[in-house]
Amino acid sequence: MKSVNIVLNSIEKANNFVRDMGSIEGNAVISFGRYYINAKSLLGVFSLDLTKPLELESGNWKEEYDVLVHKYMTDCKERK
Image (cartoon, rainbow, N blue to C red; front, side, top):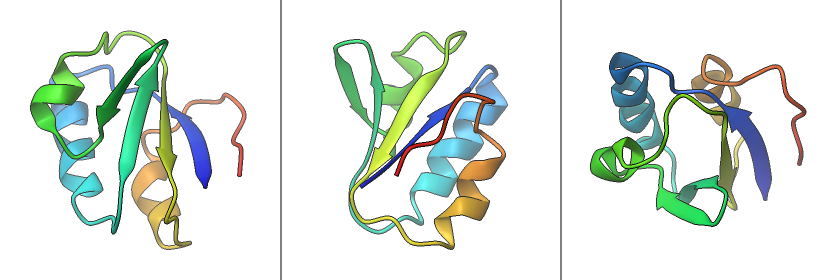
């Protein structure tokens, strides 16, 4: 399992993020407080407060996904 903090502070960034998550195998989940949303769902992502940092979690993480997610990551800590 890998968990990173991300920021999706624009509509374009959120749309690109969901597109990028579509290429990840398995589940990818965004959490914010007590809410857990499928990271591959555009409607789900837009239901969150995109002005705040979110946490992306994936149980089937591959090294090549780091390139996809890096542009959305915050300066917050990264956990594996």
